[in-house]
Length: 453
Image 1: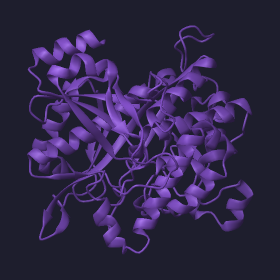
Image 2: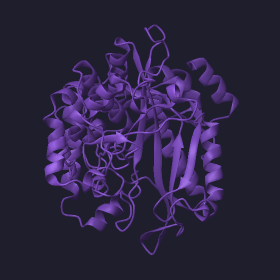
Image 3: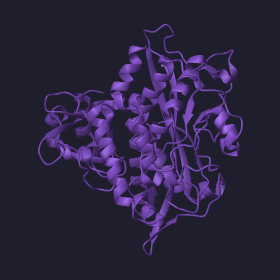
């Protein structure tokens, strides 16, 4: 879609506002909006945004980053390909934005531009990444100042689907109307916890879809007097919510294996190619720092516990749901196209552009250096003895956001990929959030994350 198409559709739909949307370094989806009468110019020139907003945190505080104060601005420039009409608010459309400096170049602290760079690096090697997400979330209500689940359904129960059938039907229709294809849906482990899986898309579009899905589900829920929360651990006494990322590598149209799934090898165990093993090796080599990007909040680390199916160790395995990287079994008759990898330590408080960009950077390091991931684990790594884990090179993932940030800061590959401005800004934002929450009780941390994601 181009700018002319956007203007035609916006006018035909009688839109009044078009939101210019982005996901910030705190993992919060934010926006400004232009009136339809100004869209013909704003779609090209963007909307001004203060430098300081790159250092704005998920706690709505301003981190201290040199040059990111009240002076100076970049532009929110929309990507016409992402234009959609929002079905849950009146007369409003939206587009995802790149952050562009006044000299016309990508703003150095922009997460979406970071993912664009990583996609380009893959392209230089004649590869592209397809990705999708499993979205876990809760429906809840606020009563007497407390958040409570909207129902008491059991895991995978048909009762759970019945209880929220009306709101989910509207959710599905809203996503379909915006071009997001649905794979699976079921009730999850906690009371009124849901899981919705969307279809694979090119990496940038996949990150856009993650933001759009979260916005849509929350927006539709409000129409039913419900709160949809994607917080990693919204209730202390039950299951947390992940955003498991699925991804696969494909040859570009001009490569030696045009439009073929590069993870596929018909002769290999689980159909996983050697290149796929090296990609896993790279992710596992960097995963202790990578989780700072994929699990981006203080609340995240209440979820990443052994024996909770969220993964707590840097292990991998075939259909091992306690491993950080799972190789799912393939679809019968569609083995070559369906093989993919799943990263389990990931949630909606992590910015999806940073998460997918970090996965690419880590995986490419594995390919370029032919990193061996070791043997796949066929048991829960948490059931191994300390001696066995040491023998297999399995380490516990960070147990706090602070530990994850320390690992990220020590990781030269991820830091170089992010670049000096984005890495400095992200670390400052997240360390500020740690400071905000350091004296809060676990329940206060839960309460303050509940409606942010």
